[in-house]
Length: 180
Length: 212
Image (cartoon, rainbow over all chains, first blue to last red; front, side, top):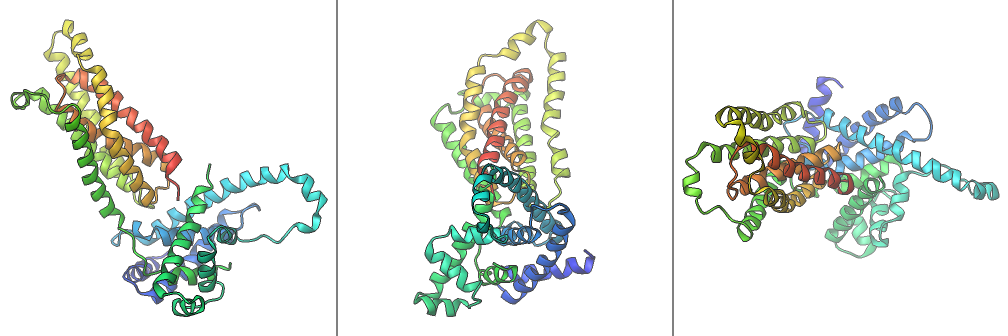
Protein backbone atom coordinates (compact mmCIF):
# COMPACT_ATOMS: atom_id res chain seq x y z
CA UNK A 1 0.00 0.00 0.00
CA UNK A 2 2.30 2.67 -1.26
CA UNK A 3 1.44 6.31 -1.73
CA UNK A 4 1.28 5.71 -5.48
CA UNK A 5 -1.35 3.00 -5.01
CA UNK A 6 -3.33 5.34 -2.84
CA UNK A 7 -3.27 8.21 -5.32
CA UNK A 8 -4.21 5.93 -8.22
CA UNK A 9 -7.04 4.28 -6.29
CA UNK A 10 -8.58 7.57 -5.20
CA UNK A 11 -8.35 8.85 -8.78
CA UNK A 12 -10.16 5.73 -10.02
CA UNK A 13 -12.82 5.80 -7.34
CA UNK A 14 -13.48 9.48 -7.90
CA UNK A 15 -13.89 8.85 -11.65
CA UNK A 16 -16.11 5.83 -10.90
CA UNK A 17 -18.42 7.81 -8.65
CA UNK A 18 -18.68 10.39 -11.43
CA UNK A 19 -19.99 7.57 -13.65
CA UNK A 20 -16.87 6.19 -15.39
CA UNK A 21 -17.53 2.44 -15.62
CA UNK A 22 -14.10 1.54 -16.96
CA UNK A 23 -12.43 3.29 -14.00
CA UNK A 24 -14.79 1.45 -11.67
CA UNK A 25 -13.95 -1.98 -13.13
CA UNK A 26 -10.25 -1.16 -12.79
CA UNK A 27 -10.79 0.01 -9.20
CA UNK A 28 -12.75 -3.13 -8.24
CA UNK A 29 -10.11 -5.46 -9.73
CA UNK A 30 -7.35 -3.78 -7.77
CA UNK A 31 -9.39 -3.78 -4.58
CA UNK A 32 -10.24 -7.46 -5.06
CA UNK A 33 -6.54 -8.29 -5.27
CA UNK A 34 -5.70 -6.24 -2.17
CA UNK A 35 -8.54 -7.70 -0.12
CA UNK A 36 -7.70 -11.24 -1.31
CA UNK A 37 -4.18 -10.80 0.03
CA UNK A 38 -5.50 -9.35 3.27
CA UNK A 39 -8.06 -12.15 3.77
CA UNK A 40 -5.54 -14.90 3.00
CA UNK A 41 -3.08 -13.44 5.51
CA UNK A 42 -5.74 -13.16 8.22
CA UNK A 43 -7.43 -16.53 7.70
CA UNK A 44 -4.90 -19.02 8.97
CA UNK A 45 -7.33 -21.78 9.91
CA UNK A 46 -9.97 -23.29 7.66
CA UNK A 47 -13.65 -22.64 7.97
CA UNK A 48 -13.79 -19.28 6.23
CA UNK A 49 -13.16 -19.06 2.51
CA UNK A 50 -11.06 -15.97 1.77
CA UNK A 51 -12.87 -15.54 -1.54
CA UNK A 52 -16.19 -15.18 0.30
CA UNK A 53 -14.66 -12.32 2.28
CA UNK A 54 -13.43 -10.75 -0.97
CA UNK A 55 -16.89 -10.90 -2.52
CA UNK A 56 -18.72 -9.64 0.55
CA UNK A 57 -16.24 -6.79 0.89
CA UNK A 58 -16.66 -5.81 -2.77
CA UNK A 59 -20.43 -5.78 -2.36
CA UNK A 60 -20.20 -3.69 0.81
CA UNK A 61 -17.81 -1.27 -0.88
CA UNK A 62 -20.24 -0.99 -3.76
CA UNK A 63 -23.39 -0.31 -1.74
CA UNK A 64 -21.53 1.96 0.72
CA UNK A 65 -19.35 3.91 -1.69
CA UNK A 66 -21.24 7.09 -0.76
CA UNK A 67 -19.55 6.86 2.67
CA UNK A 68 -16.17 7.63 1.12
CA UNK A 69 -15.31 11.32 1.31
CA UNK A 70 -13.42 12.18 -1.86
CA UNK A 71 -10.68 14.02 0.03
CA UNK A 72 -10.07 11.07 2.37
CA UNK A 73 -7.58 8.25 1.69
CA UNK A 74 -9.12 5.17 0.03
CA UNK A 75 -7.04 2.38 1.56
CA UNK A 76 -7.97 2.91 5.24
CA UNK A 77 -11.60 3.01 4.11
CA UNK A 78 -11.24 -0.22 2.12
CA UNK A 79 -9.41 -2.07 4.89
CA UNK A 80 -11.88 -0.93 7.54
CA UNK A 81 -14.69 -2.45 5.46
CA UNK A 82 -12.67 -5.61 4.73
CA UNK A 83 -11.88 -6.10 8.43
CA UNK A 84 -15.55 -5.64 9.34
CA UNK A 85 -16.59 -8.23 6.75
CA UNK A 86 -13.85 -10.64 7.82
CA UNK A 87 -14.97 -10.53 11.45
CA UNK A 88 -18.52 -10.99 10.25
CA UNK A 89 -17.54 -14.07 8.25
CA UNK A 90 -15.79 -15.61 11.27
CA UNK A 91 -18.79 -14.93 13.48
CA UNK A 92 -21.18 -16.45 10.98
CA UNK A 93 -19.01 -19.47 10.39
CA UNK A 94 -18.84 -20.10 14.13
CA UNK A 95 -22.58 -20.42 14.22
CA UNK A 96 -22.84 -22.49 11.10
CA UNK A 97 -20.38 -25.05 12.48
CA UNK A 98 -22.67 -25.54 15.49
CA UNK A 99 -25.58 -26.12 13.14
CA UNK A 100 -23.61 -28.72 11.25
CA UNK A 101 -22.89 -30.68 14.44
CA UNK A 102 -26.62 -30.81 15.13
CA UNK A 103 -27.31 -32.19 11.72
CA UNK A 104 -24.52 -34.74 11.78
CA UNK A 105 -26.95 -37.70 11.65
CA UNK A 106 -28.24 -36.59 8.27
CA UNK A 107 -24.75 -36.18 6.97
CA UNK A 108 -23.99 -39.79 7.89
CA UNK A 109 -27.17 -40.92 6.21
CA UNK A 110 -26.39 -39.28 2.88
CA UNK A 111 -22.67 -38.88 2.39
CA UNK A 112 -23.03 -38.09 -1.32
CA UNK A 113 -25.04 -34.95 -0.69
CA UNK A 114 -21.90 -33.09 0.45
CA UNK A 115 -21.12 -30.56 -2.20
CA UNK A 116 -18.08 -28.47 -2.94
CA UNK A 117 -18.12 -25.20 -1.04
CA UNK A 118 -20.54 -22.89 -2.75
CA UNK A 119 -19.92 -19.15 -2.67
CA UNK A 120 -21.97 -17.26 -0.08
CA UNK A 121 -22.96 -14.79 -2.77
CA UNK A 122 -24.52 -17.67 -4.74
CA UNK A 123 -26.66 -18.63 -1.81
CA UNK A 124 -27.73 -15.01 -1.40
CA UNK A 125 -28.55 -14.87 -5.11
CA UNK A 126 -30.99 -17.74 -4.61
CA UNK A 127 -32.95 -15.62 -2.15
CA UNK A 128 -33.73 -12.87 -4.69
CA UNK A 129 -37.02 -12.53 -6.51
CA UNK A 130 -36.96 -14.43 -9.83
CA UNK A 131 -36.85 -11.19 -11.87
CA UNK A 132 -33.91 -9.76 -9.90
CA UNK A 133 -32.10 -13.08 -9.91
CA UNK A 134 -32.32 -13.49 -13.66
CA UNK A 135 -31.11 -9.93 -14.29
CA UNK A 136 -28.20 -10.23 -11.83
CA UNK A 137 -27.21 -13.62 -13.33
CA UNK A 138 -27.43 -12.31 -16.89
CA UNK A 139 -25.15 -9.37 -16.14
CA UNK A 140 -22.69 -11.28 -13.95
CA UNK A 141 -22.42 -14.98 -14.80
CA UNK A 142 -23.49 -14.61 -18.45
CA UNK A 143 -21.56 -11.37 -18.79
CA UNK A 144 -24.24 -9.55 -20.77
CA UNK A 145 -24.41 -5.78 -21.04
CA UNK A 146 -27.37 -3.79 -19.75
CA UNK A 147 -28.65 -3.44 -23.32
CA UNK A 148 -28.31 -7.16 -24.10
CA UNK A 149 -30.06 -8.06 -20.85
CA UNK A 150 -32.91 -5.69 -21.66
CA UNK A 151 -33.29 -7.29 -25.11
CA UNK A 152 -33.12 -10.81 -23.68
CA UNK A 153 -35.97 -10.25 -21.22
CA UNK A 154 -37.90 -7.78 -23.37
CA UNK A 155 -37.81 -5.02 -20.74
CA UNK A 156 -36.40 -1.49 -20.75
CA UNK A 157 -32.80 -0.71 -19.85
CA UNK A 158 -34.05 1.34 -16.93
CA UNK A 159 -35.94 -1.69 -15.61
CA UNK A 160 -32.74 -3.76 -15.93
CA UNK A 161 -30.77 -1.14 -14.02
CA UNK A 162 -33.38 -0.96 -11.28
CA UNK A 163 -33.56 -4.76 -10.89
CA UNK A 164 -29.78 -5.03 -10.89
CA UNK A 165 -29.38 -2.29 -8.31
CA UNK A 166 -32.10 -3.66 -6.03
CA UNK A 167 -30.81 -7.20 -6.43
CA UNK A 168 -27.26 -6.23 -5.45
CA UNK A 169 -28.52 -4.16 -2.53
CA UNK A 170 -30.62 -7.13 -1.35
CA UNK A 171 -27.65 -9.50 -1.54
CA UNK A 172 -25.49 -7.04 0.40
CA UNK A 173 -28.22 -6.61 2.98
CA UNK A 174 -28.52 -10.35 3.53
CA UNK A 175 -24.94 -10.55 4.73
CA UNK A 176 -25.57 -7.81 7.27
CA UNK A 177 -28.88 -9.29 8.38
CA UNK A 178 -27.36 -12.64 9.21
CA UNK A 179 -25.60 -11.31 12.28
CA UNK A 180 -27.51 -12.11 15.47
CA UNK B 1 -20.46 -16.82 -8.73
CA UNK B 2 -16.86 -16.04 -9.49
CA UNK B 3 -15.46 -12.77 -8.17
CA UNK B 4 -14.87 -11.76 -11.76
CA UNK B 5 -18.61 -12.13 -12.47
CA UNK B 6 -19.54 -10.20 -9.37
CA UNK B 7 -17.33 -7.32 -10.49
CA UNK B 8 -19.19 -7.26 -13.83
CA UNK B 9 -22.48 -6.86 -11.97
CA UNK B 10 -21.15 -4.15 -9.65
CA UNK B 11 -19.61 -2.33 -12.59
CA UNK B 12 -22.90 -2.39 -14.53
CA UNK B 13 -24.47 -0.72 -11.47
CA UNK B 14 -21.79 2.00 -11.35
CA UNK B 15 -24.23 4.74 -12.26
CA UNK B 16 -26.55 4.18 -9.30
CA UNK B 17 -26.37 7.05 -6.86
CA UNK B 18 -26.87 7.39 -3.14
CA UNK B 19 -26.89 10.52 -1.00
CA UNK B 20 -23.32 11.22 0.21
CA UNK B 21 -23.04 10.45 3.91
CA UNK B 22 -21.91 13.95 4.92
CA UNK B 23 -24.96 15.52 3.29
CA UNK B 24 -27.18 12.86 4.88
CA UNK B 25 -25.92 13.86 8.34
CA UNK B 26 -26.65 17.55 7.81
CA UNK B 27 -30.12 16.78 6.46
CA UNK B 28 -30.75 14.51 9.44
CA UNK B 29 -29.63 17.23 11.84
CA UNK B 30 -32.13 19.63 10.26
CA UNK B 31 -34.95 17.08 10.31
CA UNK B 32 -34.17 16.11 13.92
CA UNK B 33 -34.31 19.76 15.00
CA UNK B 34 -37.71 20.19 13.34
CA UNK B 35 -39.05 17.04 15.04
CA UNK B 36 -37.65 18.01 18.44
CA UNK B 37 -39.02 21.55 18.11
CA UNK B 38 -42.46 20.26 17.14
CA UNK B 39 -42.66 17.85 20.08
CA UNK B 40 -41.36 20.55 22.43
CA UNK B 41 -43.90 23.19 21.34
CA UNK B 42 -46.79 20.74 21.28
CA UNK B 43 -46.10 19.48 24.78
CA UNK B 44 -44.29 21.63 27.32
CA UNK B 45 -43.14 24.76 25.45
CA UNK B 46 -40.78 27.39 26.87
CA UNK B 47 -41.13 28.76 30.39
CA UNK B 48 -43.19 31.98 30.58
CA UNK B 49 -40.40 34.09 32.08
CA UNK B 50 -37.84 33.11 29.44
CA UNK B 51 -37.06 36.74 28.51
CA UNK B 52 -35.98 37.46 32.08
CA UNK B 53 -34.24 34.12 32.52
CA UNK B 54 -32.05 34.85 29.49
CA UNK B 55 -30.25 37.45 31.56
CA UNK B 56 -29.10 34.94 34.15
CA UNK B 57 -25.86 33.02 33.90
CA UNK B 58 -27.33 29.81 35.27
CA UNK B 59 -30.05 29.68 32.62
CA UNK B 60 -27.64 30.39 29.78
CA UNK B 61 -25.08 27.90 31.07
CA UNK B 62 -27.54 25.08 30.40
CA UNK B 63 -27.39 25.83 26.69
CA UNK B 64 -23.61 25.94 26.75
CA UNK B 65 -23.59 22.37 28.10
CA UNK B 66 -26.24 20.97 25.80
CA UNK B 67 -24.91 22.64 22.66
CA UNK B 68 -21.36 21.50 23.49
CA UNK B 69 -22.69 17.95 23.86
CA UNK B 70 -24.67 18.14 20.60
CA UNK B 71 -21.78 19.55 18.56
CA UNK B 72 -19.21 17.04 19.84
CA UNK B 73 -21.60 14.09 19.48
CA UNK B 74 -22.44 15.17 15.93
CA UNK B 75 -18.76 15.11 14.95
CA UNK B 76 -18.28 11.74 16.67
CA UNK B 77 -21.27 10.00 15.13
CA UNK B 78 -20.23 11.30 11.71
CA UNK B 79 -16.74 9.83 12.13
CA UNK B 80 -18.08 6.55 13.54
CA UNK B 81 -20.33 6.03 10.53
CA UNK B 82 -17.45 6.44 8.05
CA UNK B 83 -15.20 3.36 7.71
CA UNK B 84 -11.53 4.08 8.32
CA UNK B 85 -12.15 7.63 9.55
CA UNK B 86 -10.12 8.60 12.60
CA UNK B 87 -12.37 8.98 15.62
CA UNK B 88 -9.71 10.05 18.10
CA UNK B 89 -10.11 13.80 17.71
CA UNK B 90 -13.90 13.68 17.73
CA UNK B 91 -13.83 11.34 20.73
CA UNK B 92 -11.55 13.64 22.71
CA UNK B 93 -13.97 16.54 22.14
CA UNK B 94 -16.62 14.50 23.93
CA UNK B 95 -14.92 15.50 27.18
CA UNK B 96 -15.91 19.17 26.63
CA UNK B 97 -19.54 19.03 27.83
CA UNK B 98 -18.87 16.94 30.99
CA UNK B 99 -15.90 19.17 31.81
CA UNK B 100 -18.00 22.34 31.50
CA UNK B 101 -20.64 20.79 33.75
CA UNK B 102 -18.04 19.78 36.35
CA UNK B 103 -16.57 23.30 36.41
CA UNK B 104 -20.07 24.80 36.78
CA UNK B 105 -20.91 22.37 39.60
CA UNK B 106 -17.75 23.34 41.48
CA UNK B 107 -18.53 27.05 41.05
CA UNK B 108 -22.10 26.41 42.23
CA UNK B 109 -20.85 24.60 45.33
CA UNK B 110 -18.81 27.70 46.19
CA UNK B 111 -21.60 30.16 45.36
CA UNK B 112 -24.38 28.43 47.31
CA UNK B 113 -24.39 27.53 51.04
CA UNK B 114 -24.17 23.82 51.76
CA UNK B 115 -27.64 23.81 53.29
CA UNK B 116 -29.13 24.66 49.86
CA UNK B 117 -27.24 22.00 47.89
CA UNK B 118 -29.89 19.35 48.47
CA UNK B 119 -32.88 21.47 47.33
CA UNK B 120 -31.00 22.69 44.28
CA UNK B 121 -30.02 19.17 43.30
CA UNK B 122 -33.49 17.73 43.69
CA UNK B 123 -35.21 20.78 42.18
CA UNK B 124 -38.90 20.63 41.28
CA UNK B 125 -38.82 19.22 37.73
CA UNK B 126 -36.96 15.95 38.14
CA UNK B 127 -39.76 13.75 36.79
CA UNK B 128 -40.57 16.14 33.94
CA UNK B 129 -36.89 16.27 33.02
CA UNK B 130 -36.54 12.49 33.00
CA UNK B 131 -39.73 12.19 30.94
CA UNK B 132 -39.40 14.96 28.39
CA UNK B 133 -35.73 14.79 27.42
CA UNK B 134 -36.15 11.15 26.28
CA UNK B 135 -39.56 11.99 24.76
CA UNK B 136 -38.24 14.94 22.74
CA UNK B 137 -35.11 12.95 21.83
CA UNK B 138 -36.67 9.70 20.64
CA UNK B 139 -37.74 11.04 17.21
CA UNK B 140 -34.32 12.54 16.49
CA UNK B 141 -32.71 9.28 17.65
CA UNK B 142 -34.76 7.34 15.09
CA UNK B 143 -33.59 9.73 12.38
CA UNK B 144 -29.97 9.34 13.43
CA UNK B 145 -30.21 5.54 13.51
CA UNK B 146 -31.59 5.67 9.98
CA UNK B 147 -28.51 7.64 8.90
CA UNK B 148 -26.28 5.09 10.64
CA UNK B 149 -27.93 2.42 8.50
CA UNK B 150 -27.26 4.56 5.44
CA UNK B 151 -23.64 4.85 6.58
CA UNK B 152 -21.24 2.04 7.38
CA UNK B 153 -20.37 2.03 11.10
CA UNK B 154 -17.82 -0.69 11.86
CA UNK B 155 -18.75 -0.40 15.57
CA UNK B 156 -22.56 -0.21 15.40
CA UNK B 157 -23.21 -0.31 19.16
CA UNK B 158 -20.79 2.53 19.88
CA UNK B 159 -22.12 4.53 16.93
CA UNK B 160 -25.65 3.98 18.21
CA UNK B 161 -24.67 5.25 21.65
CA UNK B 162 -23.11 8.35 20.07
CA UNK B 163 -26.34 8.89 18.12
CA UNK B 164 -28.17 8.66 21.45
CA UNK B 165 -25.90 11.32 22.97
CA UNK B 166 -26.55 13.56 19.97
CA UNK B 167 -30.31 13.08 20.30
CA UNK B 168 -29.96 13.71 24.04
CA UNK B 169 -27.97 16.90 23.55
CA UNK B 170 -30.53 18.18 21.08
CA UNK B 171 -33.51 17.26 23.26
CA UNK B 172 -31.88 18.77 26.36
CA UNK B 173 -31.30 22.04 24.48
CA UNK B 174 -35.05 22.36 23.92
CA UNK B 175 -35.97 21.08 27.35
CA UNK B 176 -33.63 23.61 29.00
CA UNK B 177 -35.85 26.41 27.65
CA UNK B 178 -38.76 24.96 29.62
CA UNK B 179 -37.16 23.98 32.92
CA UNK B 180 -37.03 26.29 35.96
CA UNK B 181 -34.25 24.36 37.62
CA UNK B 182 -31.17 26.17 36.38
CA UNK B 183 -28.67 25.04 38.99
CA UNK B 184 -25.71 23.07 37.60
CA UNK B 185 -26.37 20.64 40.47
CA UNK B 186 -29.74 19.81 38.91
CA UNK B 187 -28.49 19.84 35.33
CA UNK B 188 -25.43 17.74 36.13
CA UNK B 189 -27.59 15.07 37.74
CA UNK B 190 -30.93 14.78 35.96
CA UNK B 191 -29.98 15.92 32.47
CA UNK B 192 -27.11 13.45 32.58
CA UNK B 193 -29.42 10.59 33.52
CA UNK B 194 -31.97 11.58 30.87
CA UNK B 195 -29.29 11.80 28.17
CA UNK B 196 -27.84 8.47 29.33
CA UNK B 197 -31.25 6.86 28.79
CA UNK B 198 -31.13 7.97 25.16
CA UNK B 199 -27.52 6.78 24.83
CA UNK B 200 -28.53 3.31 26.04
CA UNK B 201 -31.51 3.25 23.66
CA UNK B 202 -29.16 4.33 20.87
CA UNK B 203 -26.68 1.55 21.67
CA UNK B 204 -29.53 -0.94 21.65
CA UNK B 205 -30.80 0.45 18.34
CA UNK B 206 -27.28 0.22 16.92
CA UNK B 207 -27.09 -3.41 17.87
CA UNK B 208 -30.53 -4.35 16.57
CA UNK B 209 -31.04 -2.18 13.49
CA UNK B 210 -27.68 -1.04 12.18
CA UNK B 211 -26.56 -3.90 9.97
CA UNK B 212 -24.77 -3.77 6.72
